[in-house]
Amino acid sequence: MRILNAVLLVVCSATALHAQSFEAGTSVAASAWSEFDGADKGIGGRFGWKPIPLVGVEADLTWYPSDFVAGRVPFSRQRIEGVFGATVGPELTRLRPFAKAAAGFLKVSPTSGAFACIAIFPPPLACLLVGGDTLPVFEMGGGVTFTTTSRTFLRADLGYRFLKYPGPTFDSDFQVRDEGWWAGAPRCSFGAGIRF
Image 1 (tube, rainbow, N blue to C red):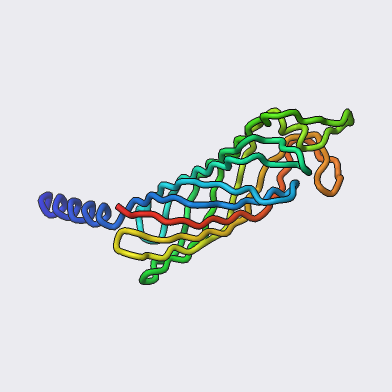
Image 2: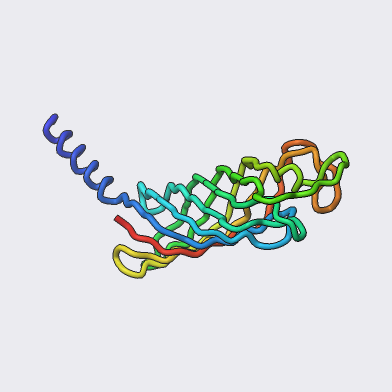
């Protein structure tokens, strides 16, 4: 009986290990800010693990290398976003539609130039971010993965990214906001990767 249990344990473990897969990929991303006009464009990388075909766990790091502006004057030199989350979706031959949820951070680097702020209270949001800050991020959405070969794939994501802004300040509708308020805007990315 012990031998049978040991054999079953080895077979089940080997089956579970065979079903899991790892993924690594690169992507280009465009993110909107709820409080500022314009798209923030970046490049990034993603590493994922699928313990079973239906569920994936992943980490995504995106670098936004250009200045981001409030009006015409940049308040940030660059940004780095890191999110960690999960995807859920079935494998349908070569397509895998999925829903996803992730959380993490957006590191806003200070501006490299001069940035003038008006002396009012509460100050505009750009004046709070001009010196750099790390904002909590929550993202939800979905996407699709298209398998191109047995080891390569293309992936498109569309989601809604929520940022927790500092305060007190006023929002884009000129409503005064206390410290720690959330607002969201769309984020999309497209990329390619490999499985191993």
